[in-house]
Structures are given as structure tokens and as C-alpha cells.
Length: 199
Image (cartoon, rainbow, N blue to C red; front, side, top):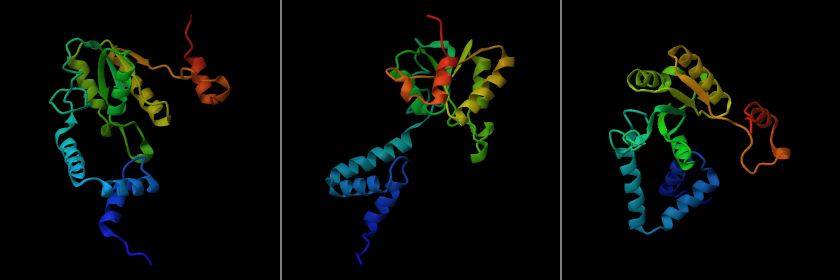
């Protein structure tokens, strides 16, 4: 029976806990790290610690930042009349890559999921309404995911925002660019039809 190399096994277990890293990937990464130069491993460890210690939430939109207010919230050229509500910080990055949005953001840090014990108090929903009292917002764009939790969160927010008198919109969903109709599932096609626009 092969003897377990405890430090390697521990590294493997820590890597396996990362999202999207399965057993094979964790083992491959563990062996790769063991074969790296010691100074490269130290740089990796320092980068992990520095990111954990210095990255925190923006006091305005709750996106990730290394300063008190994130780069987007402190940019005076951004449209402060529009706030796009997203689930996670990586959603802000995705929206920014599109170069199609110039407004502000609000990051919820999740979506409503009663089965997982995630309710409105576990998200930054109350903070959104506090922002609306101090900022000149005229439109809220809800850009949560199109899964069950994302749709429930969008419906919940729309219900709460309607009495406030602010325009509430939902990002359109449907077929991706270059997508073929024959490969689209029924729900995607239904969304594409529901979100059709006049040409």
C-alpha cells in the first residue's frame, strides 16, 4: 500500500475545495505547485494573502475594491441616474466587458433561495433602498441570472420597487448571438419570443 504524502494530500484537499476544481484538476494543480520554483510558490502564496487582506466591499455598491469606494462609483463620468442590480461582483466585470452600459451598479452578493436559507436579509437589498433615498436614480435595471433563484429575486425586487416610483426594467433574455434555433431549449426560445422588439 502506497504511503500517503501528508503535505501533498493537504494541498490537494485545499485545492479541491475551490469551486469548479474537481479531483483530477486538484491533483494536477497540487503536483504542478510542488514542481514550481520555491520563489514562484511564495509569490502565489503572497498574492493569495494580499488579495484576501486588501480586497473588500465598496461602501456604495458592494462591488469588490481595494479602496473605500470602487473605481466605478468614484467615476464622475458615469450616469448616476441608472443602477444595474447584479448578483455577484463577477457579473459587474461581465457587464463592463460589454461596453454597453455607463451607469452605476449594486451587487446583491447572491440571490433569494429559501431552500438554502438565503432570504432578503442575507442580501444587500436593504442597502439598495437606502441608496435610492440619497441618489438621483430614475431607473433600476435588474440583471440577475435567468435561473429560478435569479427570477425570484428579480420579481421580489420589482415588487418592492414599484411603490417607490422608479422605473424598473429587466435585461432581455433569449438566443445568444450566433446561436441556432434548432439547438435552443424551449425556455430560451420562449424568453426570446417574449423579449422580441420591433425592427
